[in-house]
Structure formats: structure tokens, C-alpha cells
Image 1: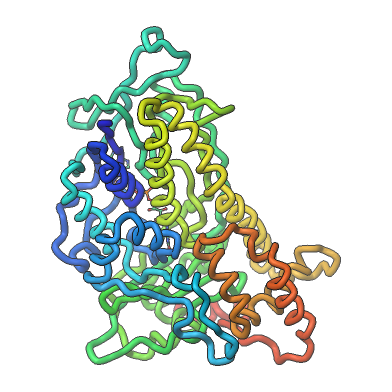
Image 2: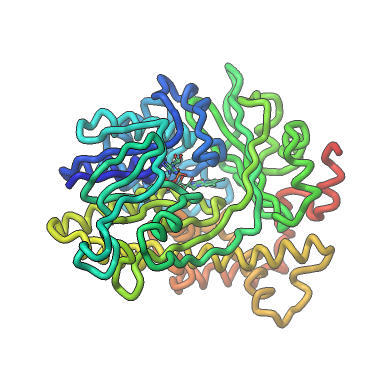
Amino acid sequence: MDVTVIGGGVSGLGAALTLARRGHDVTVIERDHTPMPMSADEAFDWDRRGAPQVRHSHAFLGRLRQLLLSDHPDIYADLLAEGATEIRFGDDLPPEMTDFEPQPDDDELVMLACRRTTFEWVVRRTAVAEGRVALRTGVAVDGLLAAPLDTAGTARPVVTGVRLSDGTEILTDLVVIASGRRAAVAEWMDAIGSPALVEQAEDTGIVYFSRFYRLLDGMDHPPRSGVIGGDLGYLKYGVFVGDNRTFSVTLAVPSDDTELRRRLGDAAAFDCAAQELVATAPWFDGRAEPLSPTVYVMAGLLNRWRDYVVDGEPLVERLIPVGDAVLCTNPLYGRGCSTAFWAAHLLADALDAHPADVVAAAIEYDGALRSEIQPWYRASVEQDGEARRVAASLLAGADPDSDADDPRTFMRGVFRDGLLPSLRTDAVVLRAFMRSFNLLATPDALAKDPDVTARILAVWQDRANRSPALALGPRHRDDFVELLPA
Ligand SMILES: Cc1cc2nc3c(=O)[nH]c(=O)nc-3n(C[C@H](O)[C@H](O)[C@H](O)COP(=O)(O)OP(=O)(O)OC[C@H]3O[C@@H](n4cnc5c(N)ncnc54)[C@H](O)[C@@H]3O)c2cc1C
């Protein structure tokens, strides 16, 4: 088929490359004017205003790495050659964990450490070199072309191409919408007579603040056997290793906390905050320098699911979404690029299974998205609802655990005094947790494993005999705020 992909981000490039390697001819239309960089550092300076999240910390999970290894090993090798590194389960374990025995599946439990711009640059470079992928940048898609409803022979619109901002049109067999979280796709569909595109959307309740740094010559990163982030209720945070001796810190603040939002946008206050947090402090002892003068801020972060297929029928024919255009999850869980690539592969599989029937392929793809990826969306929504409740309670100066009869209080206790300590002492629990975290097991796999839950509950029951867990930063929000320059 001749396929046009709207958007040259991770999902658009992932879909383009995967479809091209299955024999389709693909044109990618990317609105940002982004000439190809020559290096990872040039890519970091890309003007990617269409995807502002590229300058925030990104984790690349085991699921994504597995897809690269199986279908695009050249990309994986190039990423490593361009300075990305692997974070392998089993390396850098906490010293308290003495029961670790390598298992065959552990080879899948590897995350890729690199900047999002480096990842996208390498994927783009490979896609362009593929031969079957044409990339046009600096021109936007303005709308969809469709056969008139009365001539299409179906009750729903059939897409025939796209209209570009330079006034030209591209006729195509299939349009893949990969235009990201702010895609105007609902309006485009409406304009060609589609039923309304229905979505579920919930605010994640957080605002992201990120800053990037590079280790100075002769300096190394701190030991990585310690914690790499924390959830203080009023603040979630983490340190992310990047490529080429870079790293980034992300602080996620409740959307309603205007005071913290105001302060942390300032670079000096941001660095001061990072110095006060247990997991980031070791990176701020003079071993690194900032890569950019500012702190990058991103709000409006949603969990969102869009139904392009309703009651088993596509709303529009020959129009298929991938990536954030169909589902977004809280960036804190680091899933978006993995689910984007995963969806691109599910799409390619569905088209392989129905080479002569795009409607059947769209329906099969939708079913695969719902069975394999939607559970991760639901898990994000559930987890964020609870996180928002806790953050609101702390901001109001209340105790989120004051109601001992509330099952959520019990669950928070098991998480805090059972799961978290187990992750530092029990390799079986850590492995089960990391398999879910890396999208290699279902979201509920850990809770459904009787051995793992028994181990966690045993640690929880023993909580009175342990000294309290190390605080990962100031326990009280007001104390933290006071540490920051006004
Ligand atoms: C703050 C933040 C942190 C994140 N952290 C992580 C993480 O740690 N790990 C992870 O895996 N994921 C993370 N994500 C999610 C991840 O970035 C997204 O899921 C991923 O970028 C989705 O890729 P996409 O291609 O669908 O969208 P995008 O990458 O946003 O790309 C969409 C592209 O479409 C282009 N476009 C839009 N409209 C048009 C048009 N009309 N015509 C032509 N082009 C158009 C845009 O310019 C853009 O380049 C994070 C997201 C955010 C917001």
C-alpha cells in the first residue's frame, strides 16, 4: 500500500519504518521544520516545538527494546553506537539484596538510557535511509480528503488523502494519524462527516519540570545501587541517565500547587531542590554542569483514550491512529514511546493479516490495542486518581491516611511498608515489579502472583520491627518549600 503518516515523532517514525519493512511505501509529513541533525547533541538543540516533551526526561522500557531487537536491530545497534547505554536488571542491585539469582527472562529486563531527542534522531535517520520512507518536514497536514459520502458506497467516510498547509494534496491508500497529543484529528474527522470522535480523558494532576546536565570530564556518575527517585506525595521526582554522559532530573508537582510551580521554574531553585532530594543529591556535588540555562516545564498532561472504532466499526475508513493520537498515559510511568512503537507493530501485524481489507485490519488492530495496551491506560487512570487524592490532602495540610477504615489507607500502608522495602531486599519481588514496569507483564501480574504478594505482606507484617524507611526528601511540603529560594 501507499501510506501517508501525519507526524514524524516516535509513533510516526516507528509506524513508517515498520510498515516500510513490511513492504509498504510510506510518506511522513512532519510540521516542524527540522533538518536532520549530525549528532546527538545537535538533535538535543532541535526546534521540536510540535513535540515539546522531547526536552523532558524519557525512559525507554524493556518492551520497546524487545521490539527494536526483534524487528529493528540496526536501530538498537545505532543507538548504542551514538552513546545510549543499557540499564540491565541485576546490575547495580541494592547491597541489601543478597538473594539474586539470574533467570533466563532477565535478558528482557533491560532499559535503554538516552535522551528522547537522540532516540528520535536515530529512528528518523534509519527510516529515511530505508528507501521506502519519504519524509517531508516543515509542512503541516491541514485536513483529510475523503470520497463524498454518497459515492463512497458505505455509510461512513472513506479517507482518500490529506491536504497540506502549502495547498497541495496527497492521495494515498491509508492515512496513519501520528500527530501526537494535541492532534486536531477530531476536527478533521468532523469536517469529512464522521460521527464524533469520543474520548475519555483524565488529568494526571501533575506538572513536569525537567533539566538536563552533563558529567564533567573526569567525573563519573554516582553508584546506581541507590534509589533513583521518590514519591513524597507533594512531589514526585527521578533522575534519568541519558546518552553521552548526560542525565536529567524531573520534578513532578501537583497541578494545584501554585507555589511550588512558581518556584521550581527557576533554574537555581530547581537545582537547589535537586540537592535536597535523596536520590538526586549525589548527582549535584559538583560532578556535572547544566546542558541548558532553563528548566523545561510541561503542563496539561492527560491520560486519554480515543475510540476510533465504535461497536466494532471504524468511524472512518482508511484512517488509523498510533501513539498519543489514540492513547496517552501519565509520563511518570515512562510508557508512551513503548506503547507507540508497540501499537505501530500491532498495526503492521493487522495489515499483514488482512492485506486486501483495510477495514478488517482496522478492526483487528483496534481489538489488539484494547486487549494489549488499554489495560496500561486503565492502570494509569486508577493510580493517578489515588495520587491526586493524596496530593490534594497534603496541600490542604491534612493526613491522607487519617481514615484507618479506608481500604486506600491499608493499600498505601502495604505499598509503603511492604512493597517499597521488598524492592530493596527481595529479588523475586523486584523482578516481578520490573517486569510490569517494563510492560513485559500485565499491570496486575504482580498483585496476582501469590508468591510475590506473600513476600510483600510478610515484610509489611514485620514493619514494627524495622526502623522507619529512609525519607527520600523532606517529609513535609512546607519544609521543602522553605528550602527553595523565593
Ligand atoms: C513530559 C513528558 C514526558 C514523557 N516521558 C516519557 C518517558 O519517560 N518514556 C516514554 O516512553 N514516553 C514518555 N512520554 C510520552 C512520549 O513522549 C509520547 O508518548 C510519544 O512522544 C508519543 O509519540 P507520538 O509520535 O505519538 O507523538 P509526538 O512525539 O508528540 O509527535 C507528534 C508529531 O506530530 C507532528 N504534528 C502534529 N500535528 C501535525 C500536523 N497537522 N501535520 C504534520 N505534523 C504534525 C508534531 O510536530 C510532532 O512531531 C512523555 C511525555 C511527556 C509529555
